Image 1 (tube, rainbow, N blue to C red):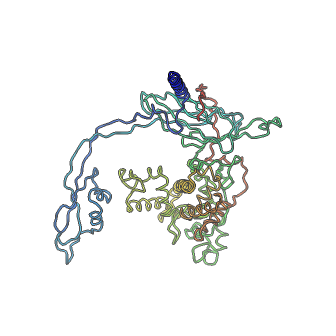
Image 2: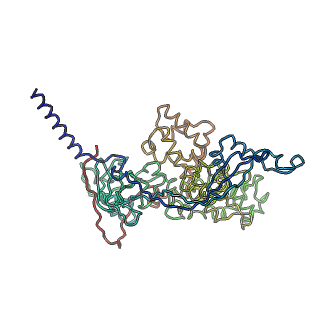
Length: 591
């Protein structure tokens, strides 16, 4: 009996020691900041004045109050508010009520059908509201690259720099924490430099967050980092005199280094190491986008507007459909060349701002509008990219940052806060129509019938419509596979899918992807395009034309920016004072 008791005690002691060891080596959870820093709410309560409006819905026939609706805005209650307070039956009755107009049969209000609104009371009030305070953030960039002038690669392995930001006064970032390559790291204070090492072609994931003196932490951010050695120096079996060189790419929403990470970051898809194909590049100079293509519709519009005198041609150089004849095209060619290249500088500027490749935009403008940004007869699309109601819907639904900026220009701030998908159909239609008109550069009172300022503005809107399509395609891939596009699909093919989504619609693309996967095939452009339904197959011709459209001359890689979507290194400014930042301290590997 005594021996049994000793054995039990010995087992208990072993268990306790084992538990202590586990707690000593325990690491933070993978996807959340430490519990200590996630429990405290970053909020403050304040009192605000507001006005409560009490509306009555009354029957025309009986003048009885059938429902009361309360709002905090002085305009009429909208349909969703009537539904909330009155129910679906009364809402339907209200929506179907027409204005009460006196006629031969209607001589008094009691003769009218339906309901009418009456403002019953206006009451000033005060209430306590909880306001969310801005949270800390972490931004990343690359330092210590030592790249040569005019080159895109690092001569030595650089560092990934984390910069913490605490928006609250009298508070600061106490440490930056994360994990890289299955190792955790941390740095005291608001800066942290993490030494990078070569990765595979798929890169590695870095997770990071900042902890604040306020007692909480930022959200857990992630970045996909790829470091590729280049040259014979990387071959241990064949020593070379080549100098080390590394290509470094970073995909993250928190990137503040050189370049933009738009669709690449959305898709988590790296570009080819040697850069994208020509049709997905952005040149440094406007001259490198120049073309001298023959555009018969554009030439016809220029003749019609009096910019080209083709009176010496039969029919004044115009076909019955408004396009130029061969004779008219020959005479108009110099003006057509000037016209199609006048937007080049703006295209490049927008490309650098948004990350949408400049050559891609120019190719699409060529295909869509032949660079005439007004509305052609019987074509109800506007701008250089021919934005339609369907395209406007995609921008407003799938590009929330653009919707947040655009909606208050048309509707009230309060209405816009609901989000585009939650708005009433009338409001959605109003926003779509307003956006299409915003990019319509047709201007009858302008000298050539086109407002060139509005035409340049349409380029920015179009770029954001492509970003919206990038986001929608990412969701389609995820819905079909449960994985991010970067794990399955190449950068170039993702752009081709986005073009199909833009020109043929998400239903075409989604169904083709489903059939491709059901057949056990990978999501390549060849496989997915083969599975497009017959009604969707014009999208193949569209993609092929946009992606193979010739440029003025074959431009070498060195003439292009690597691309606004590829996160290449930045170099510290030589005049910047040297500051020593904490280097990440490794700790226990994550399991």
